[in-house]
Length: 142
Length: 142
Image 1 (cartoon, each protein chain N blue to C red):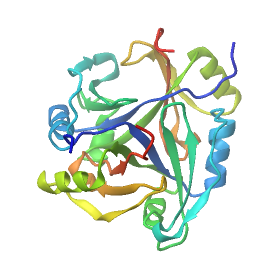
Image 2 (cartoon, each protein chain N blue to C red):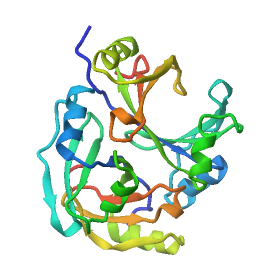
Image 3 (cartoon, one colour):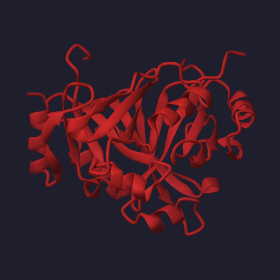
Image 4 (cartoon, rainbow over the protein chains, first blue to last red):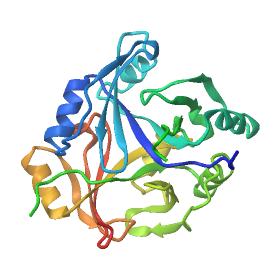
């Protein structure tokens, strides 16, 4: 197993109150042409889509309901805001082991993320208030 | 002049109370090996360095003094937090014109950014609470 290190910055997660309106902003204000079709992730309580940039993505995230883990964020930030930063890693189990070994707080168990690969979140207190997502690089994307 | 559109996601700006400590976090917790030497930008009231990832950067930003534009952010978020997202654009003057034409609020005049090219900031109210930096792509990086 190779040494644990951060891979590419996969995406920046932005929580928004209205996904369609947010897409429209990226389309009409910034000229984004490649925005994926929104889809629900009911087990995570969110609806998401991606603004594809040449090297990375903006993940727009709308709460599906009041129980969504994003709902509280939107209550505190009604216009939305930066929610997390996602880095790719080679192996999610190695990432969990290393985070635990290095004293960081991993939030929940590894689970399937919006890209279909395993993800974890590391508590913002471990990284200057920034919620960090670690995501296994999709196979074939190396 | 080509049509205005977003280029690559250049960096995510993270405001931190202590730059050295933040570098140490990226080094020891996440295994980042390529972190630039911190330097002061007195005209912007900040000290910055970059965590280089394969496709993008994390810009760590510490306020230089109490008058720093980042000082207030750190008062509100003592541990730090995600401060802005920076996208590259072909031409900063075109970007200013398009932002104005499209009704967005550009904060201040175009100025030299940490990469030595011209930058502007667009008010968070225009993009779901996210402060957006637009930065002219360094020449030779196309």
